[in-house]
Length: 163
Image (cartoon, rainbow, N blue to C red; front, side, top):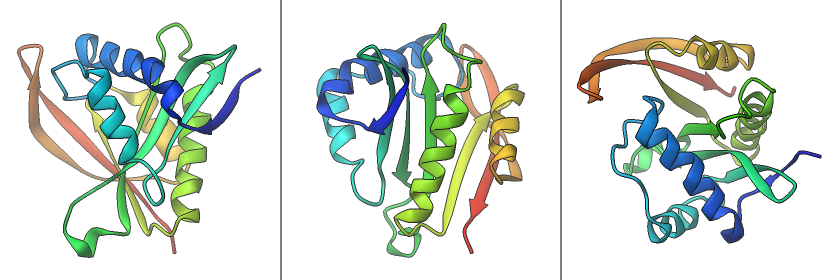
């Protein structure tokens, strides 16, 4: 049975494995260097309170994770976060990503965020659709925002604002 709960230290190897797979083999993230377990410990320490991280776990295996991260270190942006979510290869298309996105978005509202932003690399209509289904709206495109796998990629910006 799939359980979605706050991320904990014991989840870091699974979170790291999923994220490093995205780093090495996809354009879902513009990170290019795989993360060490030490870096993941620091990451988890940054994802408490207003900027939580959650995991989807089944049979003690992390199948996906989602987080809200500080958008900017400037004080006026304290009620804005950036969302991230990733699902393990072989478990995509089963609704795990939608559940993670829905829960972490709801958590953002609960902890008092006003705005959640999402950067989606071009060519990912599934992610755009998932965001739209939860009330996110397209706010623009950053042309050629990054270069990965020897090609420039644009990023679609989406947001949800809580009134």
